[in-house]
Length: 212
Image (tube, rainbow, N blue to C red; front, top):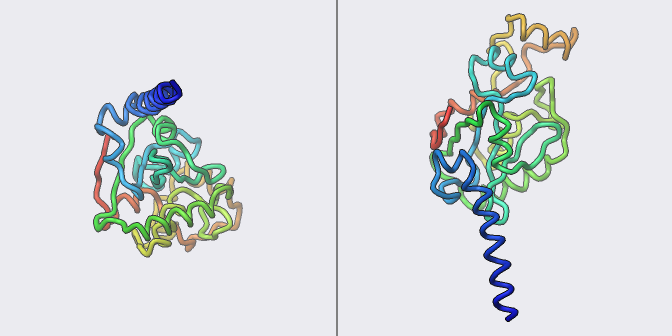
């Protein structure tokens, strides 16, 4: 009798987990099951945040937010730098993007188990840090693409060469307004910086899913 009760409970739990993931547009449109994802996959979307339009103009890209997928207990989660740096269920990350659309890229050479463990350990150490609205390279605070770049750096991979603010379109009214509000007179054109699109365009990754 006890075995039947335990089996019934397990079936209910399995059904709950399965339905919570297979009902997502993510799985309906692109994936047959979660096994098509990999630890270390990098996911992008167009954020609905107040700064998203400014970032699109500055970087000439629709990609304004990015995180790294790692598995916990067999389910995919996203390490991301918002306020604060946190772990987010994959479906919640996707739902926060415009129209629930996204892109996912994967490191071409594949990640070893050791690299994945290094990435997860580093990511956990960043949890709770404040979001860096000034996009500075300090480890005290983190913005989204900085976090992703540094996770991969910890795994021994330089996804792309960091740029400076001077490499982006900062002359538009939207960007100039943000600069004035966030920096005042302390804006450093030579600050090292990485944008989501810089990671997406890295020669070291390839697109594996795209609904944008």
